[in-house]
Amino acid sequence: MNRRYFLMSSAAAAGALSSKVRASANDTVRVACVGIRGQGNSHIHVYLQMQNVEIAALCDVDENVLNKRLDEVVKSGKKKPDSYTDVRKLLEDKSIDAISIATPNHWHALIGIWACQAGKDVYCEKPCSHDIFEGRQLVHAAQKYNRIVQHGTNSRSGVAVREAVGKMREGLIGDVYMARGLCFKWRDTIGHAPEEAVPAGVHYDLWTGPAQMLPFTRNHFHYNWHWNWNYGNGDIGNQGIHEMDIARWGLGVKYPTRVNGMGGHFMFDDDQQTPNTMTSAFEFDEGGKKKMLVFEVRHWMTNHEAGIGEGGKHPDSNTIGNLFYGSKGYLAIDGYGQYKSWLGREQQPGPSRAEGGNNWANFIEAVRSRKQSDLNAPIEEGFMSTVLVHLANISYRLGRSIEFDSETFTCKGDAEATAMFTRKYREPFVIPEKV
Image 1: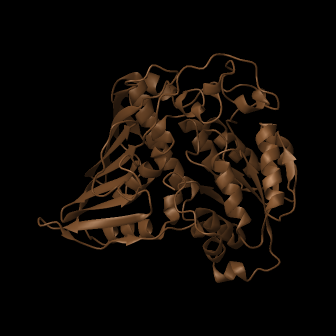
Image 2: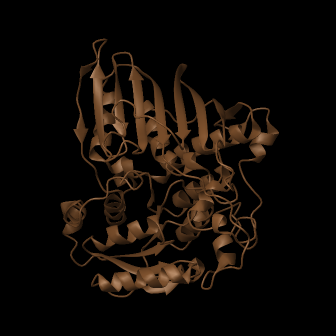
């Protein structure tokens, strides 16, 4: 629940579509799910619950996963989808309306761009890109081809979270000057994995795609790729992007002027390259008014704060959420889709609510309406939050603060940092300079 946010029951998911959408009895939206092992399996289950939505195709570079998901769809009583290992072949099918992407991070933007060019709408898992350049290109593609592109920051569709942000806009806690994002998860060591032969049924060249080709190991593959810079962005770009998006949204800011990220990979001796403990600070200066965002990643031995994480079943439940500080009080949002507030110096309990939502249902509604304004998590908003993730990681990896210029999309006077906005892409999986 804490990672996938607000998945509703089958009845609720079906009912989440507006009356206008439900009235379109013959207007079936044909969706293809790409990358279907972990979070992609959640995509499948959500679409299966929706009326007038057909899973037309499944695509995965691991045939073992692909065949398992095909069987599961059939066992659910639905028609067997077409199957692909190469997304380029899937995109040739003109009958497919939308692509739902849940691949590793290094594939998100390229598949999204290709899908827009092929006339498909896109649901893109978070973060929308592996680096800043390719995320920007995805935004350009969505705009150029006038596609509906939803970012997988699911809390944007949460009823309680939306209410919390609205309350802060109305002045509930006064002048909101600071936000903290908490990403405290119990993640054990991944150990060391030896190089080995690519498993049968795995198309490793396609899995690697635009990234540098590295020898196959279990720590370069299913899920543990998150902790390798070649494919992932660490926990700040995994679970953390959800909280980063809420923090930026709640503060009402866009891009920072200054960023500092520091931390390290503590305790464990393993193959993980990304930090398991990290604190990042962002300074915003919009209209001459400064605000601050602090983001904390912690993988071990943690505590709950302001009730965040206490909704779990065990004392060591994950603590993921956000805290907002204002001139009249503070407000906490947790990863279970609820918020609480405390007002005045006496910290009197203020408004609170617990209610989720469905980001995929919102996407399908916008696909039908063709209105960008119907999207709760448009790609433009998702990209802005993803930029914060990348800037924090760049600062961390360089070991110094960086200054960001949102007009030129560079780090002022820092060519080394600006060079890390992109990477060398492996042919033929190259992010186009012009979309």
